[in-house]
Length: 544
Ligand code: GLC
Image (cartoon, rainbow, N blue to C red; front, side, top):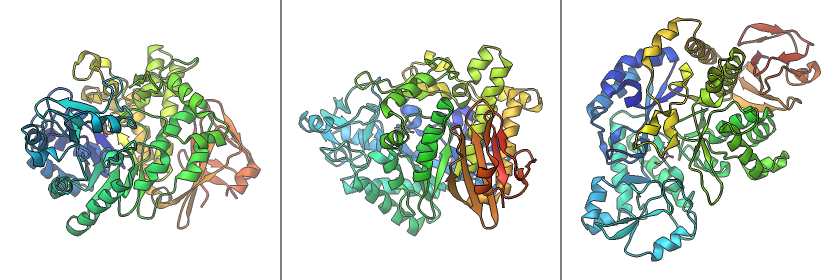
């Protein structure tokens, strides 16, 4: 079980984080990802992703000594510490960038820096704008250096040039420094972008894989317990390429995330079922990190041909999903906020918390208990799939209390242009008392979730088993089998708010041969009867 949080927003600083280890234990976490906490420029620093020093912690958050002590304390409690390895770029205040600015040719060669527009213009033809509302184009003029610098993300994030072996060597040193602090998993930030080739979009180049393999080969010698997690939020054909024992043993699963939201909006599971059947398996010794929400936006990264194969027009469908999740579609319950609308292409992505996207904010505003109940059920449905389909479930801390959108970023000049801050809010510890009151939504979210986590821990099939998608013969029901040794569990999830049925004959063909128990509520489904699921219900049938 994984959890991810911003230290400053969760506990102000590293020293106070120590006091919350019991909270992580209560949640059942065995993996804790701290969002980037390194030294960064003041003001906008892309949420910590513009690193000025990989060996120094942001002084507002703490010290490196505190971090390594925390790593040890977490390990004593069976929790692995996960940190970012932001190796595609540094901030423009990193010592390497400063030396480059001062004209040192060795350090100018760490970056892609050009005296005129000739090469930048050639590169630019094929590059996409990652943050189109912030700026156009991927090069930034640096007056001190009198050079155009490649800056794929923000203008203050300078892309490192891995065709210079010195860059690889220098970053390897930073990586080992982190490993020595007791970090067990490194999240390879923006991994798809690390190799640039003129005449391409500079994403997913073969050399990116070579570089990860090289980093890996070295860690196998001197830090053999270190694992890599891929953060490749790209086309699913490319995502899978980074997953390998010798590359990233773990990977975010952006496709499952996007398609869970897709199925929730359409109430139909055909694209989810089709894509998961064909795209779920990972190489031996590797697994997915399954998330519903994270600190970033939601992009609809499904494959166009997969969509067409199930009768969906991919372009129109993405438009529909964007409208639906920004609440601009009849009957939509979602309170998403558009992120990075691109006027040239019409593309946009979605920000917003799990609960606000699932309808809770809207329901609370309308003071409608029936709608609140529906929103809670949607959250529990996605959660149930996240913890049962296979891989490491990753909880975005705050969601365990049903965190809603926080619009205060609109008044902060360092955040106002980045709607992702709507779902990165301060932990409301003052609401903690609500956890003791069984009538609160916080209590319900927390306890229903922890119960599910605990149940999962008791079921080897859910932790180690293979996953096989089954066709339920009902367009609203998403089903799969998990099996390990002699344990077999059939999981069926209803994406409609109305009751849905799976008939007895078909259930029998899917392995229900006798009376079986639904492990979530201990109800018995008697042999020979149809399975009727309530709206948004999920059942885990023990068919061992
Ligand atoms: C990754 C991070 C994102 C950041 C980007 C640039 O995609 O998740 O938050 O903006 O890298 O570092």
